[in-house]
Image 1: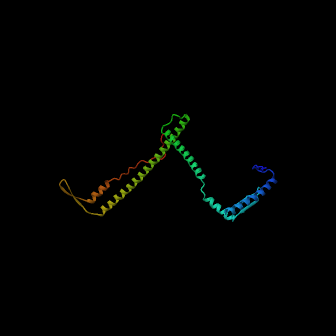
Image 2 (image 1 turned 60 degrees about the vertical axis):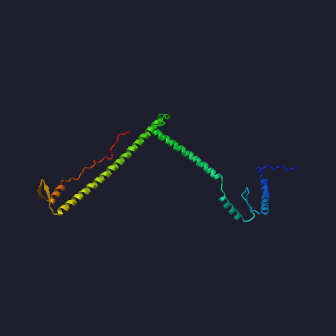
Image 3 (image 1 turned 120 degrees about the vertical axis):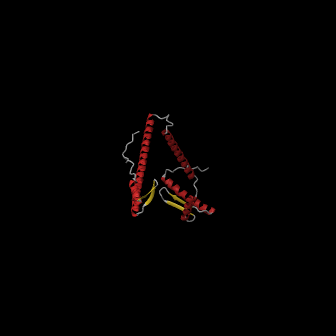
Length: 224
């Protein structure tokens, strides 16, 4: 009469479950020991009972076997991980592609394209964005112009100062010399004092002091 096949499921009776655990544990350890002897394999077995009791078997050193297992696990390539990373990368790429497409669409709408499908509320929002962008452009251009004006004013002040210094140096050079020169005016030789002529010329030279009118930093622009 054939033995009745036991259905694999949890045994409800605690006593029967403990008896089955003890019997099958001994059989499992025996099979592990036979496998290590027959096949010259390093076999290690770790079992925790339902109550947390530890049962183990090792054909050699348990510590050495566990160390070899950890090293082997770290070196083994996992084919599933690259697939997951590739899938995540594809999903992120697709998401970024959609975002770029949406931004290009918004940019074209701000240029006046693809406005047919927009309702009044969306058109008003687009108008507010354009007004805000225009205000920012005006403010940026204002700041750039003021910066250029101030730069030119500083440059002008340096040149005026330099011209005054040169004029003063020329006066000192003329006053330090005493030579006269002879010039021919309408055929008559006349002796002119070079010192006096040059001083008169220098006195008549005017240094431009015209300045760029100051710009009011709080100047207002008509609102768009």
